[in-house]
Amino acid sequence: MWDFTSPRKVIFGEDALEYLSELCFENVFIVTDPTIKTMHLEKILAQLGDSKVTVFDKVSGEPSLDTVKDGACSMIEAKPDVIIALGGGSVLDSAKGMFPIYSQPDILIDGLSPFEVLDMRKKTNCILINIPTTSGTGADVTWAIVLTDLSEGTPRKISLANRELVADITILDPVLTKTMTPRLIAGTGMDAMCHAIDGYLSTWRNDFSDALSLHAFKLLWNNLPIAFEQAKVGEVDFAIREKLHNSATMAGWGFGNSQIILSHSLAHTIGAVFKIPHSVCIGAMCWYSLMFNQNYESERICDLAKLVGYTGTAGEIVTNFVSSFKELLLNLELPLSLLEMKVTEEEFQSNLEDLIAFAENDSGTLSNPRSIAHDDFITIFKCVFEGKDIDF
Image 1 (cartoon, rainbow, N blue to C red):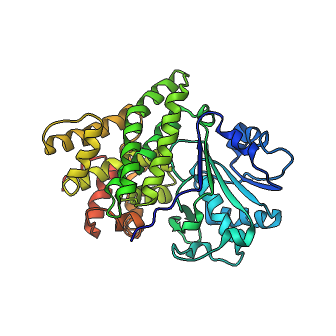
Image 2: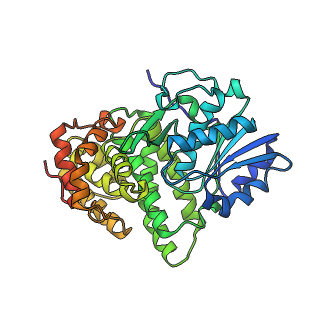
Image 3: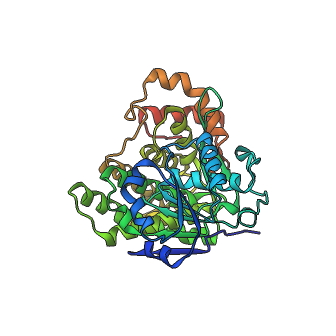
């Protein structure tokens, strides 16, 4: 038996933010970060009328459990009837992490179970509205969160999930992406593409997640390079930006109801250990994942490739597609190795065992189509460090 979890409403298109003016709230709690607060907060406040507003803007690029607990304390004091998460994946995940603590202050958020009944909305009479400002994470429609645990010597990413974490309403307004830089478009766009690929290759896939993953992948493959090149010359085509914004959410919807695979196991681990932003490393990790899995999921990789015009025998299609994926990363000016991400050999060697341990315990490893042994991870990480092809 499967369960497909979705927001109650998804509002999309230009002027989607105006939907907020149709709602009525007494007490609004906005979660954001300092940069987004400066760029976009006024757009939200303009739609909220006379509502009392509290703003928590302390979210960082790689949010920690401590940040979530800090924000939840402010939330408990403010007693909102709506939480609005305005920002990228870090902000959205932080808000989703604060909500359970608001509803139950003594909850151990790092031990959150997917099967636990939280009754957050009953206990607080509060709803969650997600407003993404980047086109990548899909966190606006997923019921999982990724946070950094700083309690031990080496920071580690932890993945938590509960179906009650999914937003009540997601608002997708492409106007919020106008200020995205080429680098941010490239990184977040590849994150979304990786979600689509992971969701389609995961062993937990299903008919509904497949449909979203496939169409999201096609939209991203066709529109991401265009948006990147336009941004480099200061051009904004909202028709293209809207395709990216919608497809990022569709990809999140897809993998959020199937699972991630090796690419995210690697990216979560590298991000935590070396403090490399997820958007910087995820594209390359998806390439390594494709290489590692290509002989085990060739039919499904062919499905993706055929969607965007690849033809030939199955072997030719897979080989050409994996090669083209690397070319796409290069065209988007994204790094292909840890060396290119400025990780030294000394840093790599001294952290190798932690990298392997964290990756082995990541949820993406469990649902990867090809099983991964300890020795496999040693080889994989060495390839990732040097930028070498995976050929085993």
